[in-house]
Length: 449
Image (cartoon, rainbow, N blue to C red; front, side, top):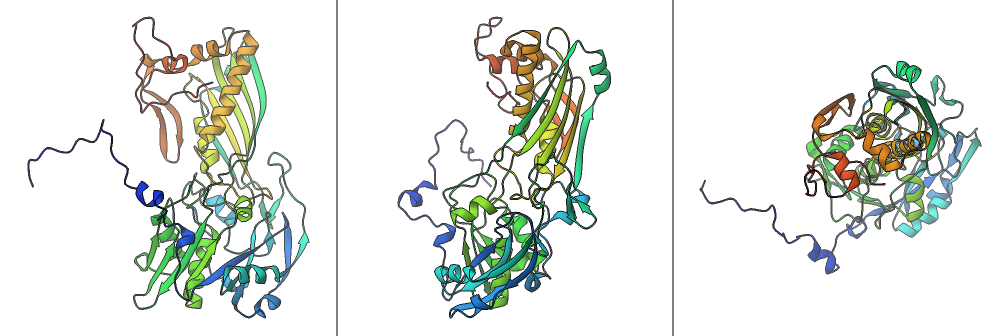
């Protein structure tokens, strides 16, 4: 140990280390990784949004020279469904996704079968020879519509999230006026330059299972793959190269990641899968889709007395690794930077026949901010004042900090620890002090209008 001064990094311009290989064209992405004697996997996906699987005929695909294997659910039935990483609500477990569709398909893109061949073109040709017979079932497209059947004994509403504090009913009863809106948020998803990809390899000499192409949460993915395949975590390694965009939707554990690892173990050869753009649009996580029925109780000056929100979260065909994360965040964060004396949120998690949902770019924050700020505009119109002014009247003042909401999300209490929200929102010189405000960079500031 020495008493040498520590190198100061804050405030200095630090040269980036990752740019050189990318600028020289030496980046190593999932599609660039190859091993001798590798197989290529192609996924046969449902072309129906909802249907009962009558039969899957692999014979024509398996008859093609160079095709080494093809699987349906019966071949992987011993592999458990993909588990949750966050918000592990017990009632959601029955809605997890298996790595191949079992008795039903539940969205366009649902994996029904996989084929393994010597090259990717041959694998694609063979996948086209797989004959899937389906019996179409009624399709649910509206999360706020009638509840359907997921399977026998299970409805398409697996859970309801409830959060709140204060006496909301009394606030509405005694209010000067109220405003009410129905707001819809459409589906979003990320479209990175690099689609998903995974390559599994088993090294028998060291009894090590390797997976290349991991992103975002490699340690959790490693432990999950090990658990699903009955291996010790130290016998699984995940390798990440460069990543051509993530946006929250890449790097979670998907069926294809588990399938290439399982195939590497069973077939004794490296197995590679690279998603094409069409697959990405129908199979990678979607997010955001919610319908909110929200109302606010106000006084004559436009001060909010209470907010009451009931919303329907469109989760798509299955519950994936994030489970209830997005609706839980939306319910907890809707009050935002404003004084809200009473608050109630009821969030219905609904399964529909669409691509399953996950997180994408500030999950829950985007949705709740959109709803909250449109509600503020409606309040301003109701009392006849400017939208900026109604926000100024309702923003939490710096002198009130810190503010602890009687709310939590993802196991964390909602605490607004510092900040000058009025100054952040108006972005002008503070007349009282004659200087620009300098809010704490860790504080929560409202979204600019």
